[in-house]
Amino acid sequence: MPKPPQLAPFDPEEQRFYSESLPNVRAPHPISKAEPGHPTEETHLGRLYPRSRSFGHYPKLMTIGEDWDVDRPVNREPGFLAQLPLHHDRSWNCLFDSAGRVLCHLGPCGAAEVDQAVKAAKLAFEPWSKLSGMERARVMIEAAHIIESRREEIAETEVVNNGKSITEARLDVDSARLCIEYYAGLASTLAGQHVQLPGGSFAYTRREPLGVCAGIGAWNYPFQIAAWKSAPALACGNSMVFKPSPVTPVTAVLLAEIYMQAGAPEGLFNVVQGGQETGSFLCHHPDVAKVSFTGSIPTGQKIMEMASKGVKPVTLELGGKSPLIIFQDSDLENAVRGALMANFLSQGQVCSNGTRVFVQREILSEFVEEVVRRTQAIAIGDPLLESTRMGALVSRPHLEKVLYFVEKAKEEGATVLCGGERFVPADPTLRGGYYMTPCVLGDCTDEMTCVKEEIFGPVMSVLSFETEEEVLQRANDTTMGLAAGVFTRDVARAHRVVEQLKAGSCFINNYNITPVEVPFGGFKMSGIGRENGQVTVEYYSQLKTVFVEMGDVDSLF
Image 1 (cartoon, rainbow, N blue to C red):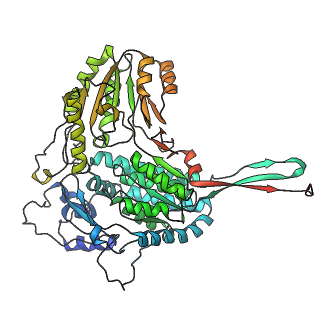
Image 2: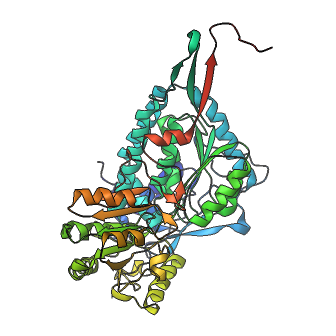
Image 3: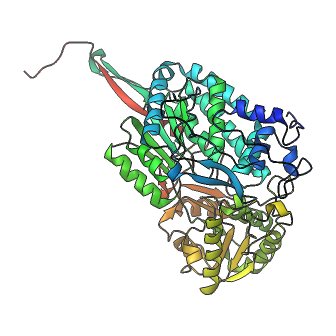
């Protein structure tokens, strides 16, 4: 792995590198080292790669969108759209979560920009879909190699983009790379079926691409989600227009750049920035053949409704309020580890989190004592430090929302066993960040708001149970069904319980493991379709049936 270049934070060469290497991000103006409140090369930011260091140092304007004259031609870089008109009246600031400073200034893409992106993707679809699976695979494998070579740079930028710890960000980059490698391997295996019919006639099926697919990402796993959606789409011969969350807009652009560098046709993977309106333009566009969305249930419902106008297939990976069941015969050490993994990854901002932790009464006291001890020991703070295990939440409004849920739980009778408060790092440059202490709630009941509603933050609700039959009824008593888990040494019980859990992704004696070879998705209101695994090919392709008559037509007329 190459070491980060040791450049001074305000080196003119870095400014040139930054401007030339990512054309759709305007290089910021240098800030004097003497300015108070800005880091120097002695801080952690001084040790980063130039691009991620630049994100950490300066407010800036990031386009899709920049100041330009109406008569000036659009500057399009191969593989993604850049420097489109900026709608100043609707622009917004994207913040550096761990510090609370402005990261970039964004303008949403309107109908014209979305149409341009879709048209570019449609043009790229024609030559890409005509390539053999092996030819597409070569480009995708090259993209995976580039990701591997730029792992640290991408991870650092994701930390700045999202606020999660560098340790987790590296794993997210690895997952993205593995996903692209996996679907590159499947690209050459796409095939139909031959069916022999009477009289020597036969039929066969062809698995064909859909066309231009729209991907709409969430802010908790920006780079990984962009790869999880684009990899199966491209492997099947589609092109994609991807809209990242407006909260975390940066690293999807890096993926577009990587596909371009790997040899993808111009326009194959385009990135458009914006919020709800931009997403609506994508969903309604007549040349978009499919929509894949990761996010909240209410937004997923709206996307499904919009896609239905064009009878477009959708993949929806939505919210969850997942149960984690811990029986008295569990390996307690592993059960505690599993509960922590089920609640505190990415500051608790994970849709599949097992936030309803059901513990059999016989071991409740011992389990809670150990969970609280380990939760209090979680290192919070600068997400770019190797020792940090919990970084900043994604935004101030989201932090306020999570803290509200903690207060609501207290009002309804839950006991705060630890955490649930604002955290102010010692580093003065991080005191504006959106930090809180991870929280464990005891004395919870099924009727409480913290147990019924998705909090999407580092808050674990612990409930007790007596019998297997009882806990299964309670675990399934939700409109959502994304994930579920069980810890027990009894193999028969484990399979029996999992069979009865109404959830799409279930775990036995582990939690929040998402190998790309395995399908991921939910039941009930947690979504439609699957991401990852071989079955996802079916969601990014369509089946054509061909009948071949080898004799005469047997006509009734």
